[in-house]
Image 1 (cartoon, rainbow, N blue to C red):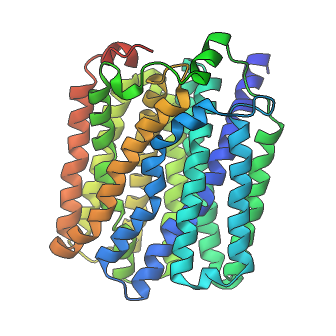
Image 2 (cartoon, helix red, strand yellow):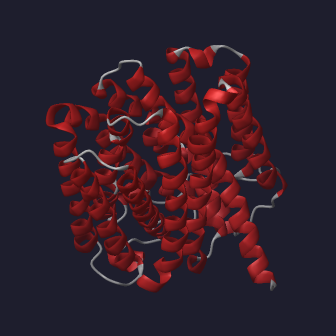
Length: 410
């Protein structure tokens, strides 16, 4: 292995561990909480509104400039944010394990909100670190690894720990998540950040250059980001209540979504990331978006009948595969649209646009399913998903670089 390959491997391992620690609690709460609420008698509308607990992910662009600008230089521009926030997540998870708070729904939802706030802020620094470290040629595959690392965390949190939750109990479950998060902090603690040119250092310490939202082409970028994942989110927000209503238990859902689905998403992220350079940015967005829309249509088809276990497993695997590929392609483009002096802020503005769109879609999904039934809801989601494909073709007019396509001066 040559030195360049070794350095790339180190980068991928570091980023994979950080995104793993984000996906770990997120996977557990997104899988367990909707089912727990549904079995406790909550309405579909109320369950849909729990997606608002992820509000920090939508609003993190408000404090992203501070993460870009302020740091302890000796410790590292990004590490000085990432390490303390990782440890804060460990403390919250350990507190859930050591108290009875996890048995109280209000306290549990409060903890979910705090963990989202910590993880969203850590994600600002982590995304900035990723853009800073990666060469353009590395971004496609690296985004696949990042999404894969996140999904591995979701597999462990939303699959393995969810399946074992009834046997282990809440205390051991949350303690396990705390230990795994602490272990995932070690690679970044030992890593050295890339040296920054003086011009870049001067840019962020003095507040950066032109804000992302004021650059030419930003409205088109944001329009694409808003619609690209909204249809998929609109559909999958009601998938867990749907599965509970057709008779699946918490353990069944853990196997179906938390294991089979997330493994498929992991594979999709890696494969999609590897194909981005070959297919081109625009081609990847269109092709993977179309696959995503087709699988959402599959849920509408299943809602017309009593689905078999085999049909649920096949469709769930296909949908997560397509979603992973589409996500890797979108994240790669988002990296291309970042300026060197404000990478964390630029990426965060784009990520927040995606989160706001998917959050709004998720919060409205319960009311849609309640008003139109699961069939009508998944049909609407299918239309929204295909709109994303049209947007990718219309708003990304060339096969050249993202900078050329959107006339963004980066």
